[in-house]
Image (tube, rainbow, N blue to C red; front, side):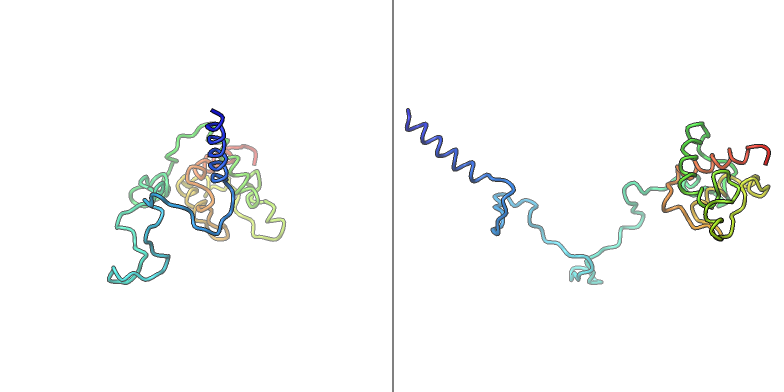
Length: 187
């Protein structure tokens, strides 16, 4: 019986020393089942004689859309109707929660130029930049929500485009908040 215990102890010690994780080795790992460990592949911008143009990188098939990038709702993602004109009203239903999100995003992206009140006297104006228009100008009050959405996304004159920074849902929230700034009386 004691010989069996010694044998089991010796085998267990050998197994434990063979399973030390985190140890570095110059030898390649053992791959009993190769499956997908070693696949032929082409590096970016390398040549591939299989295709007529000899390029390994292939263009996506026509109509292919990356996961999460489908922008089928033109009104929501571009602020335009079917004819390409800016929407008169937002496709997102206005709510107190939406306005709060808009206020938070406005304070991040818009306040430096437009100021917290929307009077165009933000911090950059105090440093000599051209002041943006005030939000309660008649031209901006009567413009459609799609126009404001487009200006946020694409920029206009001195205002840079923010479309790559601010997702469409947040741009609509900013539009809702700007509309509340325009309603404040006693300007």
